[in-house]
Length: 163
Ligand code: OFO
Image (cartoon, rainbow, N blue to C red; front, side):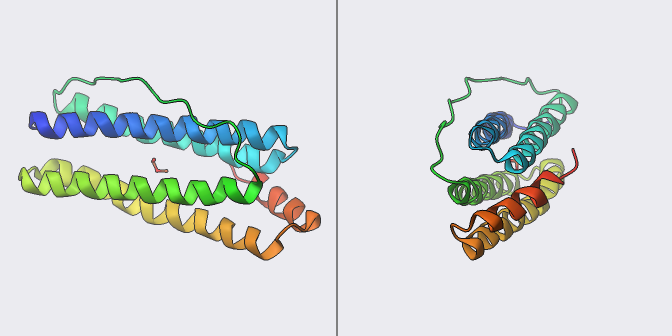
């Protein structure tokens, strides 16, 4: 059994993960409209992964006999300015999520909730990967600048993401 405080915080994190999914879906729609099918594919797969993160927390709350409470999901932006901005915003968003996960770990430690600490470790590790992947794409896009051929190549590479 987990405390009310921890259950509330995990429910709030479910909302953040679902917003992440919604944000990446909005980015997918933007990229597709800009003719960047590979970027759109990558973002679509990412949106699915974020839903998976929400469901991991959902399942954990259920396993702990806590009630899942779903709140309203905020509307994401629809215009991101450029392909590079898309990934800069992705990186900034993932950094926010990392801070949010770390705050959850702090709470679980404070509450002496060992099971939640263990469950959250997966998210701590996942965030290292999420930030590193986004930073790598930002670096590539900085390198190619406005060069259409370079963007085309990054688009092809992102389009190869399985999912
Ligand atoms: Fe992108 O890791 Fe969940 O939110």
